[in-house]
Length: 273
Length: 300
Image (cartoon, helix red, strand yellow):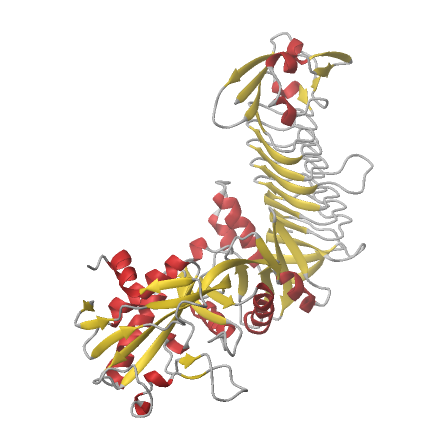
């Protein structure tokens, strides 16, 4: 069954969906969904006041958000099994603390995408904002599992304090990618900004190209790309665009952050100082 | 029943449940992948003395392996999951890990998984690291030519072992030629292996001995030099016999391999093809030769 939630034309304020669990919606009647509570601005309201609802009997279950989706915040929070499709841009905190299921964003994603997520898959056709796959403000542990695929660019502190999981950025990453990273893997197929990996304990950052690394990262020769090719082959199987040159060229490897533990690594395909 | 003038005995092969694992071994070239697999297969001929039986499966194109390099499938069979786990650890650790440029992946999704890479990782002496893709964990163990990548867990499946054929011919040369052709037919069957050297066994055994310290001994009824001393099962004109033991991932794959092997072995000089069994009292799988031919080769 497909449930479509389309924002009403008069909605101008942000809508906070943090109290709405997409997994539960699939088992509710239209009337019950209508009466779920959401925050719009500083006011509490019924979901039916800000969204128009339609149901379509289909073989696959999904919830579809349409309309002014950029105003919708915290969609898919704590998602566990359901599939959520956002037909447009996604507001901030989309996929926060999700532990399974799937979120598909057909536009851009605002800040804090997939923050503190534990599982599941988020795919973004456009760009992602700051703190994609990162930790909540003030916390030391961020993303603990799951996969985020962003076909465009991402903002700063992508994957900050990440503990596990995979973040793939098809374009460029702003500075501080993988800051305070505990473990996990971030693939940036384009340009990785400055100060990548600052304070990282373990984990892997892979950059298509970079122009500078912090002095606490040491050159470690060339990387053995076997493990990386496993990821790249999997990415290719999901139809994520990956240039063939990723399988052909040698990769430079740097270990760090040696001010912390030195067990992390940054792999760079093209390094131009 | 005759096939190409060869008498196909109206009998059955008695086969047994076994457990198996399917490894995908990759390397920079298919030659290196094959070498690593052959080394890991090693002394894994018969469950009687080796506790493990192995055979090479198909080569896998670089397009279909996890790391995009040429791959070789290796099957390992044993009588229990515990014993198989031991062999996985030993063979991957001692033969595949040291093989130049190799990596080793699980090729069998199963409800029963055993930790292999999760134990081999300690060879990294603290410098190992792991990567997760979905629910699958790989270990990266630093070695002198880069890293050895291995799946953390390997699947164990329920297979069938002990399918067999005994080929009786006029002399050693033509009987061996037929046996080798049969062995190739087994190798060409997906999910089936013939674990003896080249797939052919020149010493079929019986499960008893006059010596108390032996579990098995030469199958005297097929030994041409003993025909005057025992109740031989060799036809008058037969002077050599070779056995194929066939294990498979399912009863059907064993049956299909046996049927293909029978057809391949029906060459000039071959007099009879039969099979070994224990009266049907030990193994739950009874593979009747005539039925297999009807089912898989559309023979009448």
